[in-house]
Length: 186
Length: 289
Image (tube, rainbow over all chains, first blue to last red):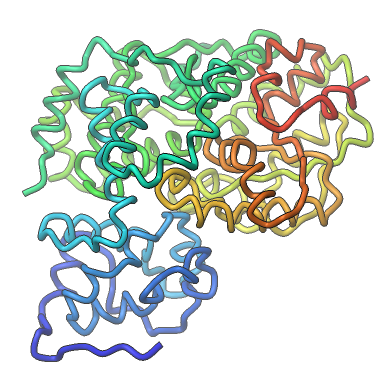
């Protein structure tokens, strides 16, 4: 795939910033492509995993942080496991996602994924544990187009006793909400 | 010896994979070890926390380790590999990063639990239960061909988890052999099922799980054994959708390794939760004699 990058927007210290935040040695990558070869979700990505690293290396900050790839990474860690230079690529995706959210750059085309994460964490924040029904409910309100596919499965799950309507509250849920407060992104 | 039990959200009662928790408990009552639920444990944050907020992910996980230490457990069992992986990674992260450790201790209002050992289910069985199983085995499923599917989170990242071979793990295969069934040689042992994308990018999950189901069937498997609630949900609950999408029939039961062990110990299939699956498990239950 041919990639066009606006050179005037390059940020020369992007790689340093990423390395400082995560300790991941982005500059070690020599672009062998083994990460991409083994990535199960590469077929859906706009940039291949090795291209994401290259974007970070050359300071193409906007391209990396607005990519769909960082959200599509399933964190299976096959890439980091096989990398001959021990670059932690999957862990790099975590850092880039975090930065994209902080800078409000998350790609809207992968809104399903970010909305899921939000709904999931809101459930933890509220109850201390996941209450699947309520987490699902919030997610489906946010992404109504996804509702249909799971309407088939949900009644069966309820029938088998697998979806409880009682929220799973823990005693220390106030402690959990303080954790969320103290770990709030900048 | 008592082991702390961290069930995690997916396998507690009234959750999508409660049969995993039920069967783990039933099996431990027969072959040990004694497991006790850690009081007031919280969600580890799973993918959603580590994908969006490293500090939060670490703090949520470490709180559980600190609770385990508070209640004087030296070792804990986390049967869900998402949980065990997050707990182990977070424990290492606070050990390696002093600044992060201080921030986490401030957030959780407790010292970081640094010494407790976190074990996955296969480790617990291999380390404590193999002799007991050999003595107490009542039935065997001779001829039942099982594809052992480990998924991602039990074996990766290998340098941190230090468990089995990340490309060709053997521990589940050895357990399957020990209970008299026959593990098949296949290529998809540690391929990804799409994990947490089951609701947000179901299309990705459907494609990846189709490959895995196809691999198992081609290898001649009668059932797929798993030790992960996400792998199970994607292969079992989504199997009908996969069949519809790819216009084919698999109808292959997806069973937890704990359920297979339970059946070999002569435990009843209902108590093990085998009626809670979407794909009928009768062929597996009937294979035991």
